[in-house]
Length: 185
Image 1 (cartoon, rainbow, N blue to C red):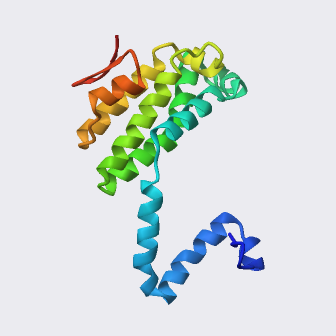
Image 2 (image 1 turned 180 degrees about the horizontal axis):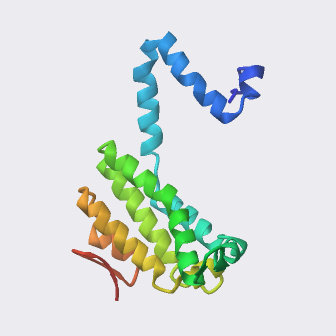
């Protein structure tokens, strides 16, 4: 938290949630900082890149631990969970934080940001279509990335977030943007 010119021994030793808890107290004591902090917050939310989002998502999905799948699939107390169902749930959970970023940008009415985030997610999912070396994705099924991307495009469109078909084609060769989602050519 400290900069090269500032020494803050107590702040540097606080846990992240303790540091975050200081912000409301600071704003209550110094309301003149609200505009500055709002501008900083918007700058942070606007700092998005299609390639970075796609790379982060691809890495997260490819690195899903097979041990998690093993723990959730098969015989469970009172039921049996098919590996494909467990894998699909794990993939959906891994996508949740990326989707949160999309909905946050949409709620803030930042159209360039929400489109960039959506295109980054779709691109990351496109890159995961060949899941042969990612066991959880492989168990989820070969259509899982396309299905998730198509669902998300439909949900985003319902909130007014639209992708450009040319951009989708450029970032996701073989995927076509249709009125009702995405399709594999």
